[in-house]
Image (cartoon, rainbow over all chains, first blue to last red; front, side, top):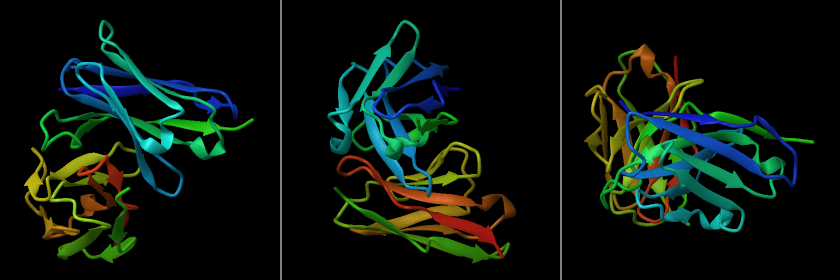
Length: 121
Length: 106
């Protein structure tokens, strides 16, 4: 059974970078697509981006200048870096697995428990 | 961007009720629509994908329908464990989520 677990600092200062790790067990990240999604206070959810089985990436256009998703296949982990954060980046950050076919790329069938990140000085 | 609008934002219903949640897209999403359930403090769980396909392990009281811009999640007989927030998500163009419907027991 695939399991995903987010980890990283819970508090980040404004203008700094937010860095999170998603550790995956029970499934290889060299298959499927692997994404980051965040949920703001008030329930709004936003897809941030994904990294594919081959290492290619796609980002939400609203974040494109600030976001980077990378991976370490030897550790079966992928990473989120969000630069120049503000208080508006305060959210719970989730990593998730998505399907690989055209019909399933966007179907997130496994999620981590989420990591709460507060941006505050 | 494709905007997703869910209604109602809050729904109160009784055990055994048939419950219908709505999701409307700002343009045709060609059935590329998923539904997720999120209970308090838990990760979202995929219920329905591609409009009407039931995810493995999900009870058959959940069903989805729709086309074009209008989609529906139906719970045929509400159970206490269905108390949660439900999100729709389109994946026709990038991936965007609705604002959620919070389902509570009356």
